Amino acid sequence: MASVRVPYSKEDDYAEDIIRQRQELIAERIGEPLHHVSSYSFDPHGLRGNIENFIGVAQVPIGLAGPVLIHGEHAQGEFLIPMATSEGTLVASYNRGMKALSMAGGITCTVSADQMQRAPVFIFENARQARDYAQWLRDNFDSIKQAAETTSRIGKLLNIEFYHSNKFLFTRFNYSTGDAAGQNMVGRATYVACQWIVANGPKVVRWFLESNFATDKKASQINSIMTRGKRVTAEATIPGEILKKLMHTSSESLHYHFQVQSIGGFMSGVNNNGAHSANGVTAMFIATGQDVANVSESSAGILYCERAENDDLYLSITIPSLIVATFGGGTSLPTQRECLKLLGCDGPGNVFKLAEIVAAVVLAGELSLASAISSHDWVSSHEQYGRNR
Image 1 (cartoon, rainbow, N blue to C red):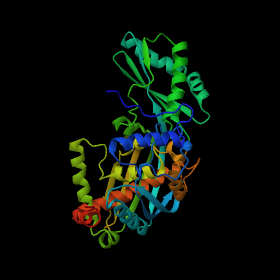
Image 2 (image 1 turned 135 degrees about the vertical axis):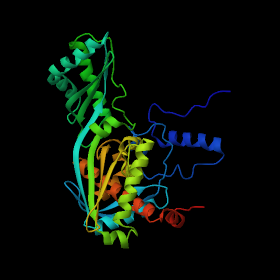
Image 3 (image 1 turned 90 degrees about the horizontal axis):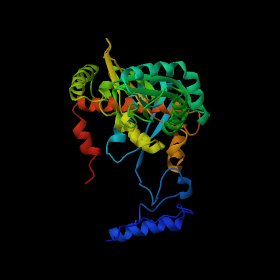
Image 4 (image 1 turned 60 degrees about the horizontal axis):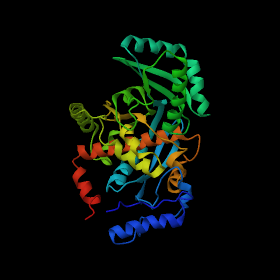
């Protein structure tokens, strides 16, 4: 039996005719046409560089939450939040958290670090050569930086980290990447830098551009400590009266539950001691054209709360590896561009603003779900809003 060949055109693989051929191939296999997948409102030629073998779209519902009041260094004022999800109660829950935090005076957001990595490994005949090579790289950093930065007017090599094991020298090349997420940018820059290194430095037995030490699209402890993408914190103080009236709980109950869930998270080895920051991150990533696989790193979170004497609650979360962009990749797609415009984050110059908004949204979700669990409203809320049978 001959294998199926997916129709492809060397001349123009985004033309309507070749797209229709692929759609007809699927219709033959499933016995009916693609009514919904094949319905889209943009010129497929604009997808070049975003998708191959295009057949249509996956339509994820977008709900609107907010407004949420943010006091960032870049995001300032009230924002309506587009959230793409198929999980019932999610938008309603985030909306409730945003309302409470806005009533409490808003959310303060701070970006404290920004860097993207590629992590080459250099392999030697023995451990001493590997150790000494790190010093040669330090001594020649300026030349390495110059080579790397010939590939981009945006990407800047900030520094190189060194981690020695056996006869391997693992490195992490840290870059600033402007408004782009930057994985491809730093990959190209580091490749050129490594070519210069191998051509000009002491003998290397072998080398690889990526050693898995950047932990690209994987959660890791090193990125929680050293930062990959943006390191951003969202914090707020919620009066006890708002917790009681709107969230049906108290600072005492929330604080106690936080202590218990932190132990549960520690025992299970999670990368986040909060409740569900991946929900808010993912919903915003889909809506705004981010690389959704980066949720694996961006879902890491460090939640902290403390109870004040007047029964107020201070709540904050730090996202140590939030990978977002407002330029390049999926951010240029028509639907995603509209959502970025809603946030005032479309185009260059807005990536820190978007990072602050995402962090604020995550904090709202943490407050809402923690309150639902604390007040035993979690199941009843899902029964009311999340059933689709």
